[in-house]
Length: 419
Ligand SMILES: [Zn+2]
Image 1 (cartoon, rainbow, N blue to C red):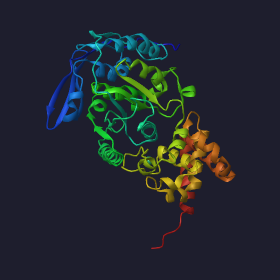
Image 2 (image 1 turned 180 degrees about the vertical axis):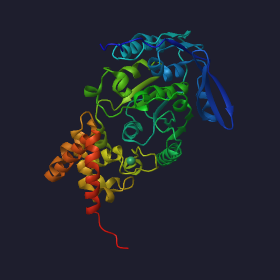
Image 3 (image 1 turned 90 degrees about the horizontal axis):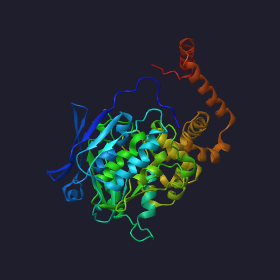
Image 4 (image 1 turned 90 degrees about the vertical axis):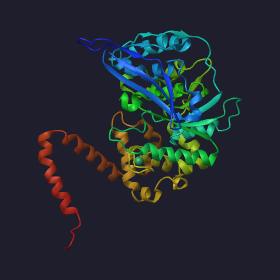
């Protein structure tokens, strides 16, 4: 059990979640609750869908808002008061299992207390089976396995794209529009019904998405509580044997303890599964290698510039994995494979570097194990020297001494341009 922070803790405040309401305007339906923190910090939190899906929004209970803001409350030392009822089983699981487990394995998380009326009548739903469709490896893995499931009642009825954090940036940007269009094309081509939602969650409650995505995604799931009977939440590519951890959970991706949190967020009428949680990202990539929809639509990029850039960490990780699997060419619709191959030596050097940086991307390991025989000794030496330089450059006086010399060497090596 981790020890709490030394020194005087911040005062506990109250976050009051107002009764949710639904407004219909301009062909859209919006579920909103006023969130009051302390005395005078009031922020409306909303979730919006096309009007035809408005009948699935749930304003009778505070479930969505409680789940969506739970981790925020634990970080900010907030107790929660809900004006609307919370589903009794959900409240029991969150209070009894989730909050204590997280708080007692964290140096900073507060053991939030929740005050709420309860409702133990089952919330009727339309029997929908859903998943998110970012077109990343994890989401495509769900679609591949559950487009037509052999298990009765587990085939997907809807795909969703929820704007609750993954596509949000402080500087604005239109990546979500690109992503929505990409998802629309996918859904149209393969015959899925797609729900594209919008929300101010990421803007009104700014959090590090990696650490809190389970909460914000389950906010979106519970906002449409009257639709879903089953929801497959794509696991993040850490298999449950090596990936599950509660230790210092406030610093780690919330996916590391999804087996606990998603179980606590499930009820007898709405089951949320961590799909793919028994296998790694690399194994998922292996399963998708021959699947045509993945070859046409895979999108993993972090650059927020539309299609895969081929240069960011996630693009490189995926490209090197496909390289290791020997199936790069099959993905030339979504990656510039020729550009990757032209820089292959550099890309493999990048892969090698990920192995040398402590606690860096573990997901690169399987590709490295397959490709390491192709990384020549001089390439490795260059990577070591590069890392050494990066370390030394952190010492200010050394940086001041070395940097101009290297700059001069680079200029000497650069081809001269004749006037
Ligand atoms: Zn990229």
